[in-house]
Image (cartoon, rainbow, N blue to C red):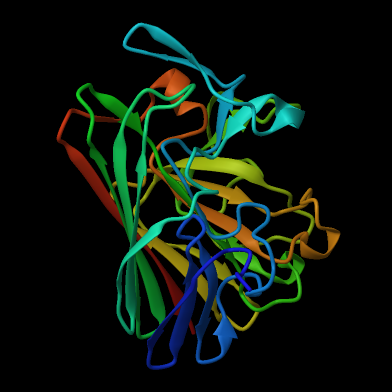
Length: 300
């Protein structure tokens, strides 16, 4: 019998174990000395709510699925009908090729070909690597086509500090600004300073009664952390390729039992609707490539 997410790739280094899957090269589980760092899913369960997925060649939402490139208009499929948006890219639901598999590392790849709504040809790879107390993910994109291509990326892990729900956890995000969105469609209206607002998490703050589906910018370069009361938890580090963080508390997940159980803490290269705005959108010339690395590690 084939698992709903395809081949299961276990990566082990000492007390650190991760499982990544063939479907979308997604992260299924991550534990350090038996402590879960992500709210994952079982080998016989389908992947839901973007759990552990990679969002490319764009992250988050594209308004009405409409955008233009090189003077040509494009219409993407609407994959979030409730908000009339094209959500989280085109490679989440395709099986990726396992190029390499070692005890502690795996390299997976796929090629994104031109299709309705998308004109470019991109070679995409994801390398997962476990080390003592951490898991790193190196993502690369190469333009295999004959014309310039845009590119954006976000990862979508749901992290946990080991608390029953997020109500017992504290969040730290070293961000000086957040993206204001409209209430109905969560599409960007502009960038706002966090000073004096409910979105200032530069000092760890409790998440009880806090609901977020928010993009943060103006990052200081420090890690993001989700912490339990005893100071243990998980942190996200990312290199300079990732200038934004999306944070989602999961209050409206379609599975009631998963709501507020984990925090989607997403390193992003660009803000929502970047295919339309062009803000921090990577432009890959023919033959050019992009690379970035983010890491989850245990705290305490």
